[in-house]
Image (cartoon, rainbow, N blue to C red; front, side, top):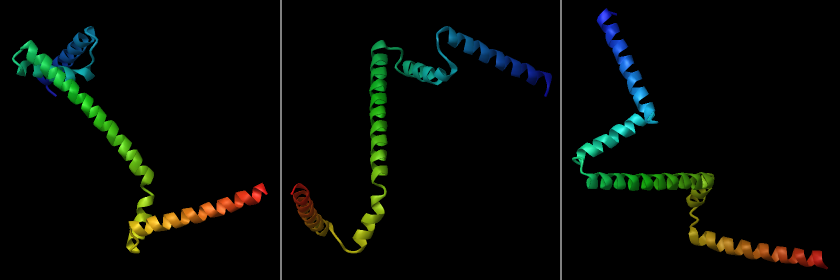
Length: 128
């Protein structure tokens, strides 16, 4: 490594440290730099017009809120999908047997009726 490269490296490190110090004076951190740059680009793009700037940031805020809602919806749907994930193989097997919704509905009604009769009889035996 040449002396010139070492000086350039030291200069880069010093500039980074100065930038970091300047950001921290305003309670900002290097992690916030990307957001800060994005905001400054938005301001420059609007031609420094305060009304346009407020409009842009309002739009950004609205979009971020919508993004948060969509992420929450995705998490909720993923949790629901995971909850029913074990049913899918059984459902595919039932379909492969040629059993449709109407047949399942009839089976459910018959099973519920039969179970109701059994429970009713059991309660009568326990009570008497």
